[in-house]
Picture (cartoon, rainbow, N blue to C red):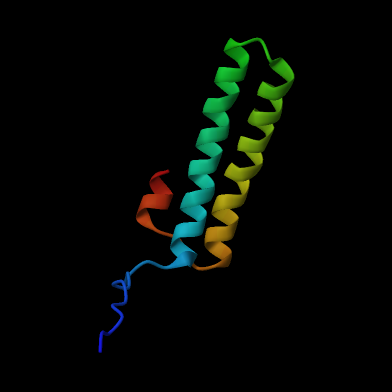
Length: 77
């Protein structure tokens, strides 16, 4: 009687291209969080956030090349 409607499928987005950019944004968030920790005097948490940001920043380019997901946007980031 009634047909169930399926939500429209998003096309053109590839996880291979999104994953490195997501890692870059996480690194940016970790870096900004470290500033907040520093302003509140939580030095240990700030240092750990900076280290996490560095690790994520190092991984995003390698993962992009590994997955063949490099993009112009990622190169600018």
